[in-house]
Image (cartoon, rainbow, N blue to C red):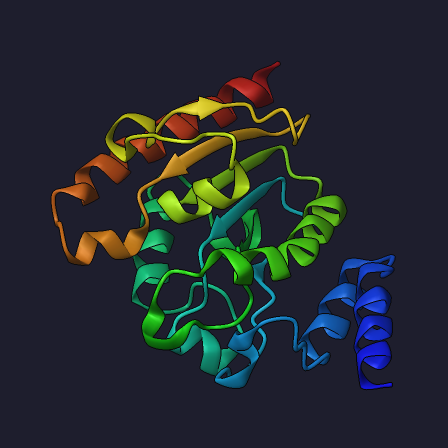
Length: 209
């Protein structure tokens, strides 16, 4: 009976017709689809503007995100906000930000494959509702789970490039270094500024067409 109730609730979330309906149902669902439910404080659905044409996908909520139930509000989020502000983008107004998984992994570790797969239907629903024109992937983990067909890659070569993924027609993808990486390697901040300029130029070119 309990399993049936869980499936019914998940089906209800995925049947949502509006973003507000989806966000509320998922946040209130007490989702048990993977072991991350055992230690979370909140389900972290997103942050930003669901009407934005730019969608940002990170890997997982951290401690502050777990406490505030908002994506990318910790130190890494602040770094990302600053970099986007440098090209005239307000992350709350011009972007919709979410993660591969919606619950914080213990110790802020990367999400495991089973956890990402359990959360995949929710991410696909977000993509369906938001219908972004540009999808920014933050870090190798986000790229790995969004595009499993890319078996091996170098972040040094992939970051800052624009590319297509056949499974997501109509959207252009771009990979950034994860902002948290700046804390361990300060030289990456310069690279991220340069990648932001590439994104700015692409957005300018698209708007000029």
